[in-house]
Image (cartoon, rainbow, N blue to C red; front, top):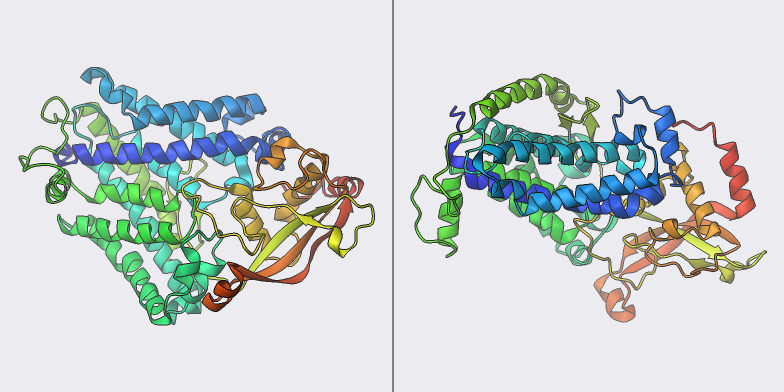
Length: 506
């Protein structure tokens, strides 16, 4: 293997810019949502994390300074560094400083985001968090400037992509009969965590199309990943299939930056020669010498610095050693959906939608200003991503991540709140207090600055309207009440309930 990686300068450029955009979205979300969710006065208070979590198990800067001010400083610093990475600041520097500056920049982004992931607990418990950390750590060793990236690191990015896709494929065929009998897409668009404007239309595509979809899913996730390690142009064919697959998922659902990050990883399956040829075919560039990318640095790409080559070999050895757990997980019949095997999230296991729910349940939070409200005295809060009103079209949010909305989707799967939903009682309490930070997490607060006297949570079953129902009513959803999730409660009731749960598991 050629450690100099002469053919990946443009690949690195595109990969770094794409990853920086994902980091930017992640830090903007942290700046806007972390404090009301997991800050000093959050639904899961930051002080609890600092007191109960061991630094060695969940390293975070917020062990040292568990304050909202530190959270804000870290989040906005992450935003600024992400913008610097998007515009390629290290490439502006003299060659001797470009790679060291790039390494420091990407290491700072990784360290800051690790602090949010470990301190965010259930609100940051998603597979794309550890995937961003793993991919971001590899970016530290790609270098910058006119020098070529270490090809070893490019292949390690392919290894992340392979585990991402292949793990998702295996957990599906093992986890649910509908993946094996090709019927999962009959339910997926309606019951997925957060439908988008295309979901209703995708749901109503012909059954035959849905069968082909599932079959295509199996091909892209179980067969195509092996092409990533093939010679060109076959590796690029595998990468292109992956990009198209992720594009369809972005058109039909809101999965935060999971799909965008996978597209960024897929850039590693290309080479500068393939990208130059694609640009030429698209009319974006004229014929270019085979040794040069379409958009080159000031000089022909130079050899990878020797120290970066050796660091990349050391990195590969660490990744291979840490891959034992994830590989065992992939090969196990009891495959975990998403799992991290080290406190730094350097090498992780991935997998999505091992099972598909057949019915969509929703939690609707309602408030009333009446002391003894009647059935028609309740008014519903609106959420930015989860459906409440049946006449509202599902919105588009990807790659922005609505963390409260996602947790509400998970909570609705249970007929009653469990220990992992203890944040829900605090949410209701904050709404009765009229807490401005908590209200910022909502899509619509009908009570404004005059909060209600009581709240309740009702559980509904939602389904998409049929085309005929939509033409007749204009609605996107039909819903049916199935039970009470949290009985009507005043602020005093909720505070008493919270005191009774102080001993709950961390």
